[in-house]
Image 1 (cartoon, rainbow, N blue to C red):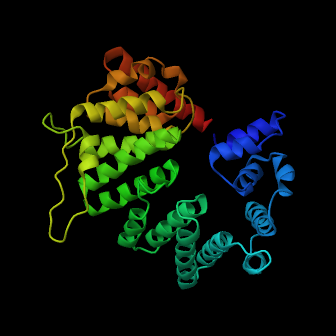
Image 2: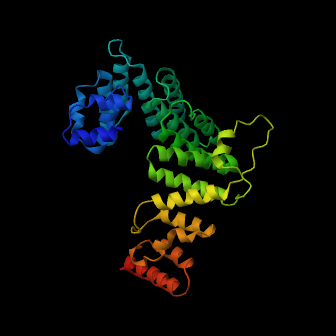
Image 3: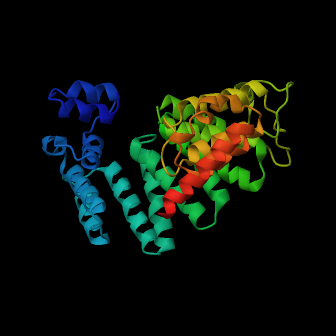
Length: 343
């Protein structure tokens, strides 16, 4: 059960929503109402009477953010409600400080943003650890550090999102794909592969298929140069991995071919269906990886469907892995696509 399912149920006429919220393990309707705003569902009006005064102020801020009207003054008004002894909500105060930090950052006030984002994460960790807002505060804090060229601080924050501390699978997946990219920039190949692998796995559990494909492709790209028949299953390597002590060398990356090929196959089967679309970076990436690993048979259906492809770069890739007459057909398709674009 997730908030989107509740909204779909409401839109289809269901009004007994309390059991659904309980099944999700949530105690507040605020998150459902926020998603309802994004989905433009009438559930928002239905839920507003179920919100506290502080929650209503936060929902108003979400409306302002969606309409591009969010200001520091409006956040201060909401903070006054969250701090009022009669309507006080410690967790929402943390949420609002996070919102204020993001606005400070958007305005170029880096130190004020740092103070608010740090305060918010500390408060939420104290009163609502591993909650939706705490997860978001951690991701925002990591993104803040990365944006001001503090990648090691960003990695430290991602490390706070433990896979065993109750954080949402989607949060773990987002965190680990970002950590993988940071590790890769530092040349930490084992940690980069480990984080991408974890992101792929948790995104699958969270049913975030696009994210799972993206993380899986990163794992395959990293590990394709470190394939070894002698390697342990990578899931076992991940389970055995421990934080390094000072001066201790990182494990050498070795990945069993079944792990690399298995993830690539999953990604090829679960990427966006069909081959149309003027921009298909997902297919381009997967086809390049399949070419590198000599697994182009995974895309035999694509290679026999030139008329469905609208992405010139994808068509050119298909031409590069085709032979004889089929290669000519794909080359002609590239010319046709480029001609249509220039008309």
